[in-house]
Structures are given as structure tokens and as C-alpha cells.
Length: 218
Picture 1 (cartoon, rainbow, N blue to C red):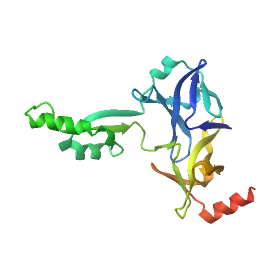
Picture 2 (cartoon, helix red, strand yellow):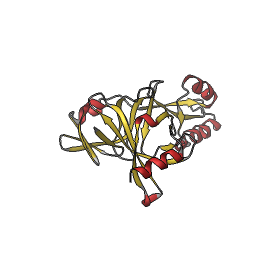
Picture 3 (cartoon, rainbow, N blue to C red):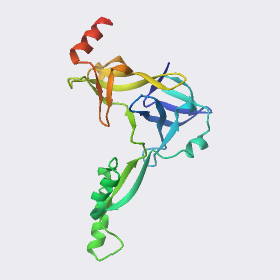
Picture 4 (cartoon, helix red, strand yellow):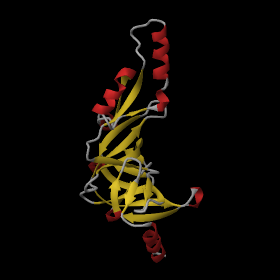
């Protein structure tokens, strides 16, 4: 078994080269293929898709890889951004339903609109759209992703993901139960997961069943 702490530092040749942001896996069989790794600081960060088989070991807050930092730089991007005119936004969502408009990029709407008001034909009002480069059958798990029971009660948030080796199939998740500093970890088996959605994980156990199971573990 190997545990991937989402938020862990990625170490290459003794140097910190990034941070784990998400785990990419098949929604049907929960077999993981990549980690989303953030490189750079807050102002110049980029997200790349790193194959899981690069990982050679993990500790609580660090994973080690057997590739160089330059290898990481050559990886495909997890997200691509492009500019879309406002009059083409509906078509953009039809062609790329998984894309999202970044609210923080309001300036890309305001500035072109002002320029256009002064008769500049080269600045059509628009927004920056972000596309996640995932296959239709793939999903991601991030830290803080809500986990709900089958009767739709929130029971915790994802903290770590546990895999079996060498096939990198998810064997479970470790969630944080409670509020703020009063949280405690709880391990959820992978066969309890019935659906992985973009904004939550749904289990096939009710809140009562989960609490009964939790009491039995004490």
C-alpha cells in the first residue's frame, strides 16, 4: 500500500520541484493514472499531469520521483486557457462542457469592453476559459473534496488517497471528520464509493451505517 497525501511536496534528486494538487483516476474502476502537480509560486504556477509510475516512495508530507525537474517541465498541462469572445461563449460550452470560466479573470472582460467602447476593433469583449485536459471517463480527487453518505449527509473531506501496488488501483481514502482543529481521520474503503463527481464523492453506506462502523473500530 502507498498513501498519497494531497498537498504533499514532490521531491526530485533531493530538491522540492512541486506539490501534489489532485489525483486523476478512472471513474469506473478507480485505477489511477496521474497526479496533478503544481509547479512554481502563486504568481507563476502551472499544473502538469505526472504519471503515477514516476513515484518511487512516499512519506507523510512528501513523495519522491525518479525523474528530473526538467522531465517535469516537459509534461502535458492539466489545464489549458484560451480567450473566448462573449458572443461565442454559448458555443464554447457546447463544444467543451467540462470547461469553466475563471471568475478571477473578470479583467479580461472589462478591459476589452472599455477598449471596444473607444472604437478599437481588435478588442472584442470576452473572457478567459479554462479547460481541464481529462478524458470523459476520468475524474480527479482533491484535498477537501466533500464525502457524502448514501442519504446525502456530509461525513467528512478527503485528506489522503490510498493505493495498492503495482497496479495503482485505489484501495481507499482517508477523510477528515469534524470541524477545523477538532478533526480526526477515518479510512473509507474504495468499495464504499459509489460515485465520483466533480464536487463530491458519494458512498453506498448511510450515515447511520457509517457511524455504527466507526463505533466498532474503537
